[in-house]
Length: 411
Ligand SMILES: [Zn+2]
Image (cartoon, rainbow, N blue to C red; front, top):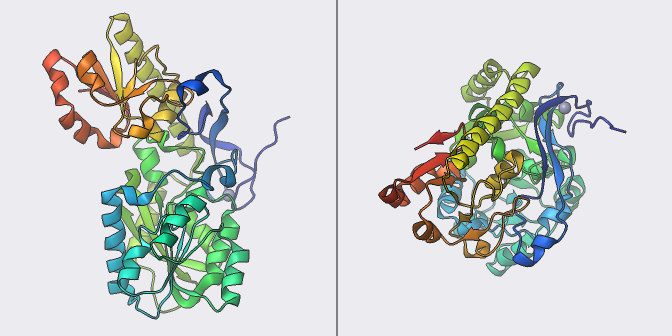
């Protein structure tokens, strides 16, 4: 029996598909040689879109407890992300006058990568981070952190202890929240009368417009636009009064919200303009999603067509990179060692391991120079220019690059 799932936000039955990427393992579950002979869990990667509120979403196939309680990703490892965090804290102090008697609360505060910059300015902070090992790093750095999942109950608890926030922020957390209404209701409760909420998430319009279907993972339950986030916030008595478009994660939005009855901050033209652009793009029409679904299938066919032809001509193909998004792409397209002999990655953790589901071995980058492949298949296409410049020596033996997204391209 197939039960129609219901929308995570408005409970409307989900009858429309954004894209169905088939069955996939969790994209960060790289395998050791010993694990190759064991069973591997695969889950559906079927994204629906709600006709009522336009929220694009996966069912909760894997619980957040399973994914996030010992999370391997530490934000502090990336220099560009740290710069992004530092700029943000300067902006908040300058624009909203956040000062040393304010309280800043970050939801999914990770290892304190962002809150540390508020601490430097003597601004009181509170981090909330469910992954124990990651929260421990923040605590060791002297950043007050609660190891819990955020929601309404926790917000009431904090308010009971006289803690309310002048600024609540959440970067790339909203997509990972299965109980979306509980989470937003919690922010409403925790926010002071004239407080501000800022939330960053990858923009659904960019995902669709640039065919970034491989940025869909089991860990990301929801995919947002401005229009949909306005509906969700409005349902909880919150109004989005400003929005910024950022280059991070393939194109993100930073939304600014306040209590609906807080008249001290007017809604900017940027909100009105982006809302119009999203309507023009077709986000409120189901045909737009059906067309995207078809575009993704055609991308797979074209990519396989190229790979089959290359293999028939006796060419060798190596991969470059082993990012999470690469695993969505490889599993959806069914690309294994029948097409790609191996891939390389700079992260030593991945050396000697195999890509989840497709079992392609991962080596250090030198391997390319040693084996001189005819093609190098770039999996982290967002870094294509950087990788092409850095690996340009493959031209010495007539090597070429394959970029799979937005559409297969040979360079
Ligand atoms: Zn809905």
